[in-house]
Image (cartoon, rainbow, N blue to C red; front, side, top):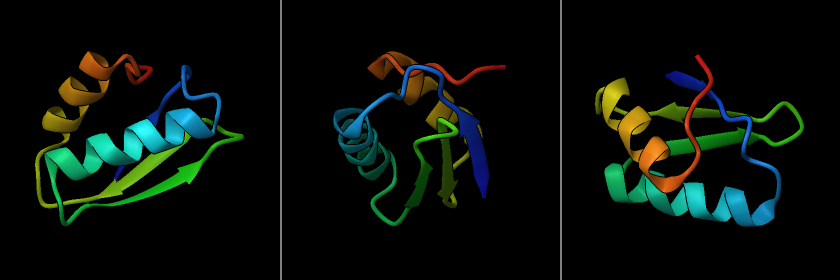
Length: 64
């Protein structure tokens, strides 16, 4: 499971956009959100770097 701190994830619209993005990267992935902490956890067989690149491109770059 991968964990991403997403400082730009602020609302339900963000969660919906990220959920769609995760499904695009890996249809089998299971995203879990903690919106208050601005954290996304993803269970996936795909590599972490694929998600980092997709999130960054979508406007939600993970904090280092």
